Length: 587
Image (cartoon, rainbow, N blue to C red; front, top):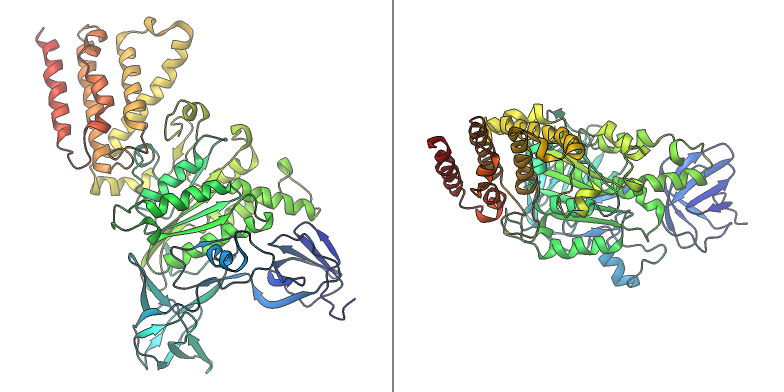
């Protein structure tokens, strides 16, 4: 036995125990074994210390040393994060590949961001300035579309006593030196460290009054999510969770996208990496990767690291939020993260709750989702973190614990439907089971920036879909021929809404992303056709006569026929509806 008291006594998968009293502290990061695997202290007792290891423990043996670091599990935050792809504990996979090949070796130790690369840095302060927490002291161009601002770390304030000139610096070079209130000196470099489980502080939280524009009609019109909000995408296997998240990552109007692949298949992350590198961002004309960070902790990677990957993603999102950016984090999927919690909890021999998940699952989910928000940062900017988490309930059973607890902490619920997915209806968001609680706060923004009629039209669309839902129960019993013409019209308009408005083609150049202005005009055409047709039916004219005009079939195709840059063509649709239906009034 080594003389060092911090030696391994027991190994149970990713859970390692040390027998006897140690000087380790709770949540401290440690190096485990001769290969220095990264771990974290998760339980302390008088006679036992329990460590969660974030790497494969095969080959680890009792008696090997555990090395203390004195620090919590933290991220290195600085220029070089954008365009990168990390594993769950912020190890860059490209750098690991250069040192250990295509497979991640045990104890692989590489710098989180490139320490040798030089950045063109502009210093924004001078000697004698007094800097507060969060204040920007320098900046550099991290990517063609992202200006990286170096900020004084939280809880640090002092007077500038030394200041370098503009020039090229590496991330660990000191560029500004502060004298703190206690008389000590503090060196500011291009980067800082922050523990992943601690939310970064802000000046104040603000109301969520701006929508996250996604270009997906069923989301932007029916169930919008606010910037700084949280949304859940639950759905069974094959319903399109990953496809929907990829589409949101490509087209939403967030400044920075953090995509976390948590326990999903590796080919999905490969697809995301390939698509993002090839796609041109319509807002900037640059590759989408210039504003994207990928965190890959796929199903063949260590289970325990899934638990850390979610916090790694949200910490990076908060860091860029503090610069004044609007960030969006896509987590795919939180169910795999919860399964990792369940496995570790089982190895710790904790009392299980529903379906074997630990009793603290709700509190862990709340810790994650409540880090979303629209805030005023310490440097006086406005920024936000929007969280969109996929949930993978087995057998599409939304009553299982992860889905139910996620609903408690999110205000937007996009329920994916298996029957819609198998019918090739994309996005497969079920309009009867989904909801958004942000409509009240966002109404003012829609009224001011789109039209005062937008929410009214949206409510009418929902009313028609709800009425259709009730009528379909009657149709299933007695058939549609038994319905009066006004109810048949409701079914026809509802079909037009479903196929012509809610269903989109992610591969069509004019339909993959649709502006709010086009969404508004599409609703106007549909509701104008509905209103005119209802007037004709009230005159006892059969609905078959209206359908024979071909207006309904043409309205279904308007999403393809009208380019995004020629919205004036919608007026032609309105005029055609008027001219063709006016003949029935004259008759």
